[in-house]
Image (cartoon, rainbow, N blue to C red):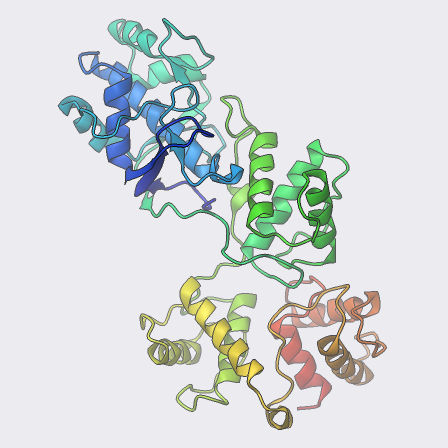
Amino acid sequence: MAVVPVIPQTVTVHLGRPNEEADNVTVSFTEYIKNVASNEIYPNWPEEALRANITAQITFALNRIYTEFYPSRGFDFDITNNTQYDQAFVPNGQIFENISEIVDEIFNNYLVRSGSIVPLYAQFCDGVYTQCNGLSQWGTVRLANQGYSAMDILRYYFGDNIEMVFNAPVGGNTQSYPGTPLRRGSFGDDVLTIKRELNRIARNYPALPRITSLTGVYDLETEETVTEFQRIFNLDPDGIVGKATWYKIKQVYTSVKRLSEIAGEGLTISDVERRYTRAMQLGSRGVDVEAVQYYLAFLGYFYPELPPIPITGYFGEQTRDAVYTFQALYGLTVDGIVGERTFREIERAYKNAVSQLPADYRSAIGEPYPGRFLVLGDSGESVRIIQQYLRQLAQNNPGIPEVNVTGDFDEATRNAVFALQRQLGIEQNGAIGPVEWSEIITRGSGI
């Protein structure tokens, strides 16, 4: 899910019950709400009743979309048009002019519980033939005729602890799955999100081990918790968060947080804040900047057009100029900003360069970073190489404990990495990313 809700440009509606074979239609969000409102309520109702109902319809739809209620269950749509589950939508149905005007005015306003960011599960029913715990559509008419404002009506049904979010931004309705599986060695906000959600799920499922290291590195502890989650929910227990596991975690998280219920827990900014932003530009600092600098500095051996840059963690003019050059070489928008696409291209170019690197180049440019974080439990040639340099580094640096060169990333290796990270003043996650790799190689070889 997005960090904070945005109004999607489009919504995909399933024309039937969730499990029923039926067509999907994709329409603009405003067209969808105008259609729903024109089929759910009457245009001659008092305006405050219309506004209250339309706000509930907007909020209900956004709750379904933001929580990925249907995609997390394996469906390829956002919402159904079956009123037993969702709200009415009639393809090519009549749109009433006054309803259309109200939707155009308030389509990017929605309700939240105080302190939460997730759109409220604003359940409603007609209040005559069907009853529910939420808004009564005909009841809104009675309240409006008594002089209630739209917000008064909404608070009457949903409680005093609701607030209106006004003028929310419009954005793409992109599903949250990152596109590639997360596994041991992965890094970033998606990893941190999964860790947070698994820990919340563990409160309801005590058999699920809690993750103690809330960093952006997918470590052995995370792998073990994911594996247990997969066992509990009858998924292939491979410890990898592929698409099926990702959306199962989303589904269970939404369930335990009761995000699709009127009285749900809700989400706060701290629940979803991003720590490892991929939008880097002039003035940015941090581990992601260091990673970009490492990749670009390495690529400079193969592309003389790329200016040399130091690995400092500060996105200065030298880094910006290198980004300009890389973007021009790869046909990207030349803006000097490392957004998601530019980062992926830089990372891909680095991995391609490493895979095609002749063995005799290593002595000239140093051991190339393996392209993934090395963490506790890993083994292999990359671990053996870095342990050799780490051992040499420890001999000249009393603050770094010595390690044995075994090819197995053990507790002693992680403790040495912790010590190095403390000295460097960077996040202490015990994992070897591009920054740690570069520092160990450089310092261990005496360069």
